[in-house]
Image (tube, rainbow, N blue to C red; front, side, top):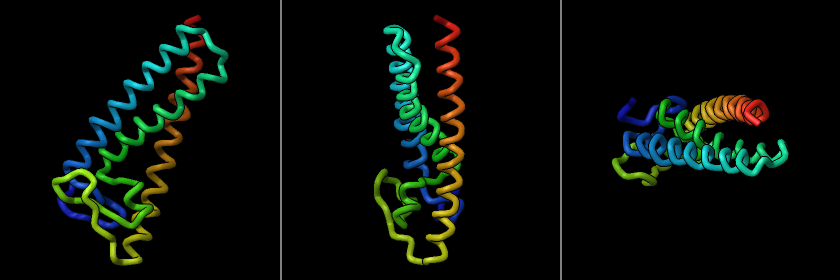
Length: 131
């Protein structure tokens, strides 16, 4: 975990990393689990299970951002936060640095999306086997 902004590598500090892991990652996992259990309990049509993709993606993406010390939203808006306060951002001045950040943000976002799609497919398959 870096303690300074590094374009295309690290754009959030310790506080933001902890926030993404604890609040976004675990929080969304709890919401996704509750939603999944509710869908299974009420035995809804299989297509409705696709809604689980949303909290699964948010959770996976939160964990990915915390693992890599990188916020894709900040990268897309040309910001970074290495401060000890969540949400305190500074502008990325260099156009080249913004480009590096956006490229890495796309890569991280796509990785999270792929993992989320697979995880959701597994959950849907499990729901069919368990009923």
